[in-house]
Length: 425
Image (tube, rainbow, N blue to C red; front, side, top):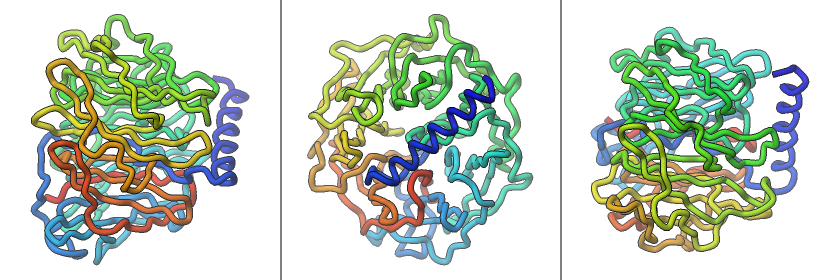
């Protein structure tokens, strides 16, 4: 990629950010990955938080005003959601807010933070009170040809469901960086052969099947229009070696995609909105995954129409016993958040039916959302800077949502507040 094209991309990103800040758009960015970061359910938690009763989960958010990672504690026992206290916020150098933030195994937190000169990968351990301690050997340099700074790119950094592999997309030279995660120390080791060529795919958002066998990658053209062109697919070994799936890339224009816990289905959105793309796509797409090859095929009646709110982002329940719940987060044509919608996935045929109470018109409107690793709680990131907040909800078996405590205010500027959720241990 030439320096002229590289500069043009940077300029377009900067203009997009300034445009959002100046026209009242939804001035925040969501946690960069909604992938399951643990293969074990731990919804009730064992740790003790100091923001009220026994801790259930911890939320971590990039604070690009103070250059720290801020911490928050959810306690379902006390019915509270509040800033973790006492809490020592890790300090980072000044940066543009990050490429992504992700939890692995409920024990480790990783973040990629770029500036125009370099990119750094940070790693912390998460203790039983929700505090963070820098892992040995961090921060460390990570080479990204063009820092992934797009405000709507939530899945540029993800883990596999077991939390043993870390993936970073590098759109500049069509590569995917893969690290092995040491389950004892949190140390990262490049997977054999990493970085891997993505071929003709310009890797943006990534997602995995629920069993961690296949990696799916969206590809975007040069227009920065929040819409996918094709889907790349790669088989993944336990060591993190990627091999392109036969027939990949598949001609499905997905922007975000995530697998259900059974490994049978891949759920996705095109990301097409009038604000960026020029028209709205009010559908959720469901694909059957060939367990032997990783190839994807639309299920009967896919795509499934929403009730009229265009999916801008999505979250798939990482742990489920009777069909995963899928939630879409919406952004209308003038840049305002709309009501969240929920759907239940059938494990027999991949069909979607509306969740209890959907659309959730009585709850906070949000364009960004994320499950905790247990799949029992859903978090909304909402508001317009400087009044940005994070809310926590209990998820019922039918997909209904009940607020826990009050929304907590976040400290962020406008567009780069990545965040991640860990269950208490």
